[in-house]
Image 1: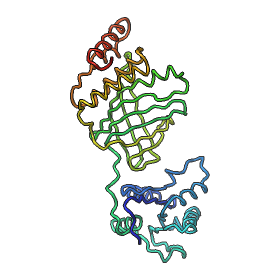
Image 2: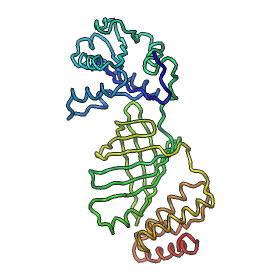
Image 3: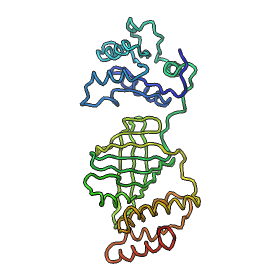
Image 4: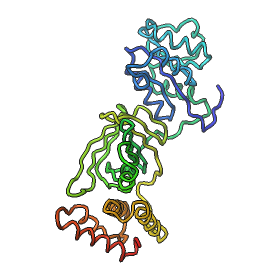
Length: 345
């Protein structure tokens, strides 16, 4: 058995009878904890797909086919089709024997893994997938950390977010619309300057591959948004997660930093904040929409910092939450605080 290079990520097609699905799911978890990529029908094949074509794609994609062999598998035409395809393409076939059913004649000379001794069987499986001299990487734990996320709503609206998933189950971030097909360039310029901070809680169910985010956004003109997002993560590579939420929106998340919290702000970083604020003004002009974006930016930056940056956050919050005749005074007060603080000119 040849030694694999450490940068290789094995791709494993899990071939099984529907009666052995529970074992297939359990072995998928084991393989993914070792950072192997897997193809399991319930994750990779949708209702509208051409089944033989998707199976062919999966077998062509994989490095090895894990064949869960049992009496049920022996009588399944789909199991026969899948391992036949792998055999014809000269893929590595790893028999994982679940009962005393003899292997097919074409496979009877292969060394197989027996399921009756799980610890020993998993060790043999790891060796068969990764190679004898290749220790698997640490278990795949996609969280916590700093991430970026994008969401696409039917091709009409795109939004992006900066998100921190914290080890204590909290989530913090900020985000906003990056493209809107129904908005004019002038309207879009103002909308894109608005970055709304949010906070809440997150959880991830590895078995169901379900990411849940419950959050509240900053109040704007007295309105606060509360939402629960559940993303079925049908695609998960190291550092990248894709999937759809229950509303059909397409999500992509990718890791940008594993540190649980941002470093303290330096003088150079304060200048970076000033530059970002001035860019909002230069892009959108000194409009009310631009200053809504600046207020949200102030709150988001301060929330992500461990110390006081001197930003006029109280005036920003008052401007965002005040309505009626007092709103103009709150707006002017916030603009004046930005100018006197040297944040904009």
